[in-house]
Image (cartoon, rainbow, N blue to C red; front, side, top):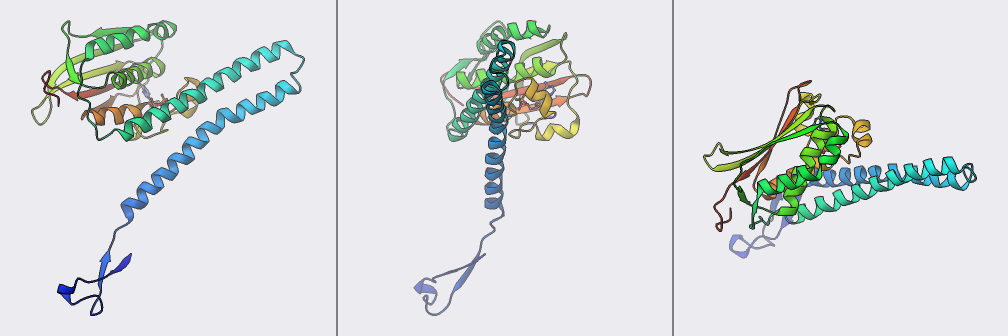
Length: 269
Ligand code: ADP
């Protein structure tokens, strides 16, 4: 793109000559394309349960009108689809909230071990349903970081729920916390969620945190997934100046590690 701009008088004035500036619009176009992709994906994801709902409404008004058994069954499926839509909208809203506040780093000191315990307690019934045992290896003493409690709950909920959903049923999930030092010598908290399920093939690993990316869409839908969980995790960790490490050995499980910079109480990060 060539844009003519007026030349300052010191350089001869606009009537004497003209400067051409060259703008590389590739990054802007990429952002535009990503936005368009996102809207297309979100619309498609919302359309799927909506189409199912309107199909069942037609059936309930027509062929199944006087069939109480069919009504009961269809209403059950409609409930699942409506819940799915609600979850998708919740995740989209959470993602946009986190993106809007990406530049504001949380500064309240929170105890990560207490947040993890709250999440594992809350997921106990799902674990029982899947016949999975959640083992925790957490320090007794509080481990504090500068963070947003609600967002950290979402991070651990997503990672542990994924391990329960996609890790083999009848197995175990290990949630551990270790205090370590990052590559640039800064103290760091690492929370690792390890499962012993089928794992993830290496070609998928770099794309897992993309919005709506799923290894197996059918499997994710069957598990009530939206494909937004890990994207949300990544954005929340970015806001906390943290990072997500993903390791997987196919057929031997996956490990997702959330790393956070550790700061001294009262100092912030
Ligand atoms: P979803 O809502 O589909 O669970 P996520 O963003 O949380 O979306 O995860 C993206 C995809 O990554 C999932 O659909 C699944 O294919 C894969 N995945 C996530 N966690 C695991 C895991 N622990 N083991 C195997 N695959 C996983």
